[in-house]
Image 1 (cartoon, rainbow, N blue to C red):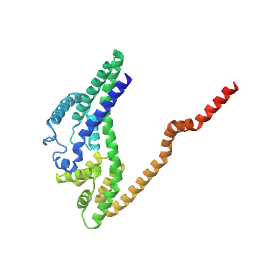
Image 2: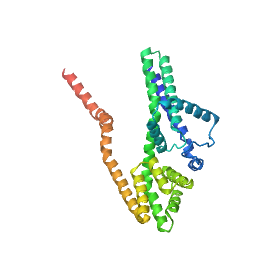
Image 3: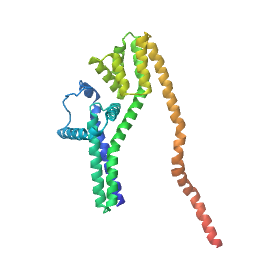
Image 4: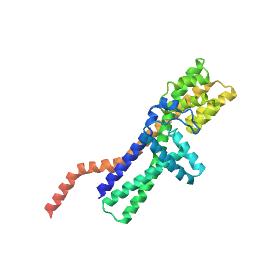
Length: 304
């Protein structure tokens, strides 16, 4: 009975993971995806890609999200849109994601109720797993999105000094700021390269340079991006050399990255302590002290 419930939970977790991996497959074709977002920020009419089943599922999630989204405030919808952009999911509206959350909640609840009924449990246990499935199906997608956003921000922070170095070399060789950013973006991969490509795309659409930089900051609110945007805006307003500002900023970010690495290294012994005490030490005590304890027990039995 317990094995059946555990297998059901494991299958639900695998299904949710595969589902959100399927959502992120178009992100693997970064260049093609970025070339297909001329309607970024608008209610675009870009042709949907993917299979017919995927398009039908998107339509169902959008309709369900429009129904559920009526009960969401505009502030929560803006926060969800911001979280989706931070995770790199540019083409999914917030209400469609809410629809997927509702589908995941209903699906998880039905699967858990079915497995519990097969196990022969009573109405109380079935009701508990029904509520648990609804809660897990609703919260797990949001957790996966927030986790993906955190991982993405960490990669952006790690790659930002290299981007600044490329901009410094380009500026000092005679290129302008926009040309330097384009030159550096062509040689960057990963989330930072995607964000910089999107920044250049916004400028090609007619957005001013300072507005596109502020849009970048809204999508990626990290300390490094905030310092990067602030340095460029202040350099243009005050007339200070961009190369000097960028060089100093790169040195400062590398210091922060080294300090973060040292902080993680200092936390490692504390994190190792718990598995050491609860997993490794008991096994060592059994192997080392087990024979001695048995010998002592045999000795006391002989005295008795």
